[in-house]
Image 1 (spheres, one colour):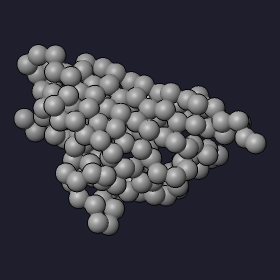
Image 2 (image 1 turned 135 degrees about the vertical axis):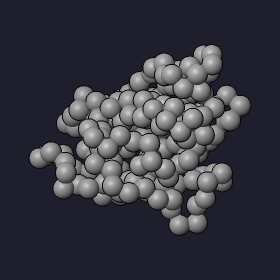
Image 3 (image 1 turned 180 degrees about the vertical axis):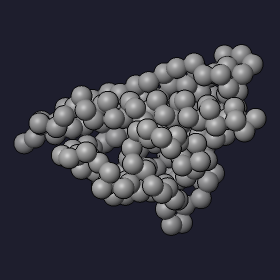
Image 4 (image 1 turned 90 degrees about the horizontal axis):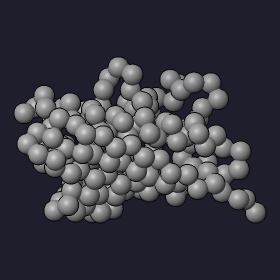
Length: 167
């Protein structure tokens, strides 16, 4: 029997953009590449599309994230396509959660993440991304946590930058 390690990742920051504008970009589930930075991207994401039969505004809503696995450092392996399913959206409190389907890098399982967007005042918001996942024995927990937290940093800051640019 395997003993899995339960791991948590989190990032939170204040950003200089309107909470509702931020929220609307976040809800455009397959539009990651429209807001994620091109240089120093946290992961080699090359295409994102809704799964067949899924559409925005209807839950569950799955997006398939396609990666250029040839761009990964030696010793790092991830699936070429990772499905992420938006499971819950509360527009009143600007809270959502989603999961990663199946097994991820290094045997990662049971990934569940949430994002919260709070208005702090005109043009100011606090965004918090958090997640939990299980890793098998011997998996590099600190490395996996670090990659996920870098993705969260991108979610927080790249969406805010895009929201401001589009305003």
